[in-house]
Image 1 (cartoon, rainbow over the protein chains, first blue to last red):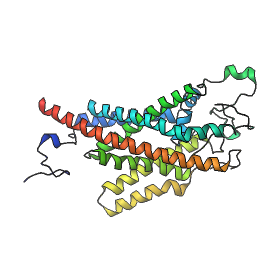
Image 2 (cartoon, rainbow over the protein chains, first blue to last red; image 1 turned 180 degrees about the vertical axis):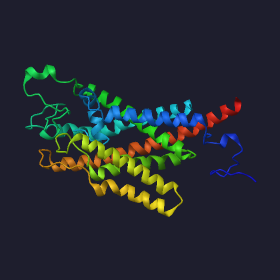
Image 3 (tube, rainbow over the protein chains, first blue to last red; image 1 turned 135 degrees about the vertical axis):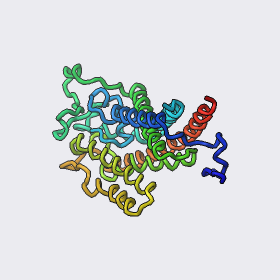
Image 4 (cartoon, chains in turn cyan, brown; image 1 turned 90 degrees about the vertical axis):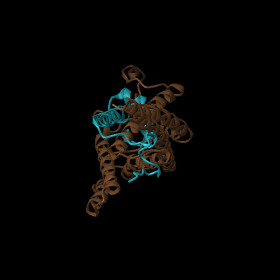
Length: 68
Length: 249
């Protein structure tokens, strides 16, 4: 039976495989992306440090996170 | 780790952040500067903010009326180019942060990516991070009254998590009861209600607040579409490259 991906092409052709295999590498990538992304968001949009607040002030207002 | 995937997110975030700075410069940033003129007693206090009783604890907008006290005030970028530069850097960091979070969600959902599917993910990001929280906490200008900062931050985060979880249940679960739970999850923060200020009086003109609300929503929508589309395309290239490398090894 021919496996089909959503583009309708034969998924056994490697160049059409666009979903990474579920393995430790993928789990590590997901964990890193989620944690580092959350850390950056906290740092730029939520940290109560006055200096960080002042530096990111206009961004906080523009992306509509609580600021004042 | 899939380094190419992370680099794709990084690059998409940087580009979206740069785009956001340009887009915000049209309406959003001029409106913030305009609103600051109404802070405090109406004197143009530049980047400094008057504190109010609700946010004295820990938070930091103490405008310094006495010149001698300027020395102890925390650093802030000078108005003009320096301030815009820091906004640019902050937008890029925020762009990378959202790109990484969106990438994690895309990888968890194990979706095949393209520019088109990226646009859909970007639209969902807009709903989760902008529309849902703004239903309770409307976009704030400097000088507008608001409830305790930490309470609002907690409500914002809870709303984002509930909305994301609710949409995931509705989109990926095949079972009707789970989809209903998803819908309820989306509604819960709004039924509970966002923290509201005790008084709503402000020197900021209502027209300014309305213009700002529209400008931020439109600008954020464009930002999320650019981020989603670019990220979708970059992730498609990155995952194909990763797969080819696997085979080469």
